[in-house]
Image (tube, rainbow, N blue to C red):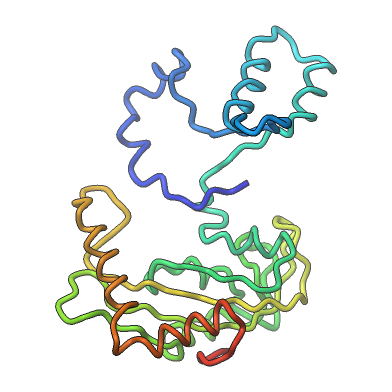
Length: 245
């Protein structure tokens, strides 16, 4: 299971004390869950820790322990940053034929990297490529030139636009995700484009509140009402009105 998040500079902040933290078992770099049974208030996180504790406490691994782990459905959550940063691969692998993807700007090329450079001869060795059509260049052109644009209110510090549209895709063969070639997928994209702001590090956290306010004001403004209605109808209700590829 891939958690779509960013570790930002977290490891750097703890680098000098990682060995000590590991020795004293006070820091766990992975998150684990397990089946909880019928109890409504049972925590899957706590259940995962219980199974892990059983593994750590046993002096040896035998058939009984392996069977316990298997029945518990122990699942590790990982940062999807270098495998599936936007979650599209997980959705398509699960059988989705229509995906809505919220992205954080055109300058982040993670989406474009999931499309083959050569749509007629996709490189199946690239573990990130999910789609053979359209090509990466065609997608990039559409994202930048054909999508509808919701503009911010005058004086916005961080928001430059909210772009949206639909791309008709055909999957590439990707054994790493278990995706077979030739499947048709409708990919709806909402791209929040910004300037002078990033995911963390030395940012003032109040800046993110300002950005959220700018997004809300743009979505709620009278001059953008028709575009917002178009976005909702097209991307969520299946009523075409936005440019598509």
